[in-house]
Amino acid sequence: MKRRKIMAILISTILGIGLISAQAAEKKTEPKKQTTCPVMGGKINKAQYADVQGKRIYVCCPGCIGKIKAAPDKYIKLLEDKGIVLDETPKTGKNESEKKSNSHAGHHH
Image 1: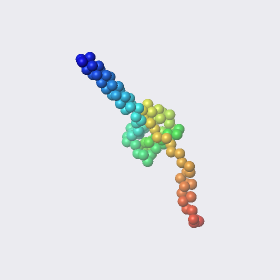
Image 2: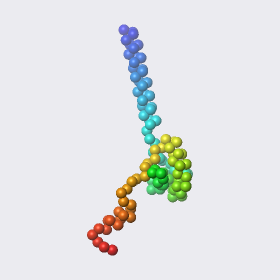
Image 3: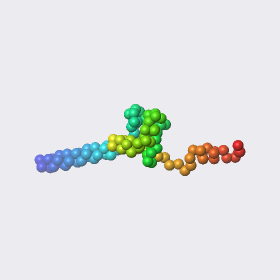
Image 4: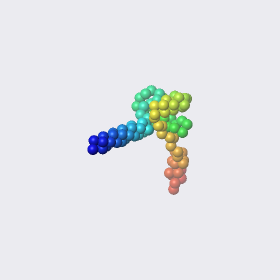
């Protein structure tokens, strides 16, 4: 009887450790979202960004956009080394000016 209790405790302990390890591994693989500007370190403004190499890097102000575009590899590496997964540059079928010109259907200027 003692042997069964010891085995049950041992199996429960092993399963418990495995579950904890699996949960810890899950947390490590969750992608981090960008929350700070890689140039100045301030909070990002989602209306301010640089699209480089198919990735969108958010910044805190318009002044940081030029710095990102001047050295995109540096900033992409900096963010990805921190485990941050950058958004992809959105793909659109038409550019904004085409969309606006098509919205005037039915009348002439």
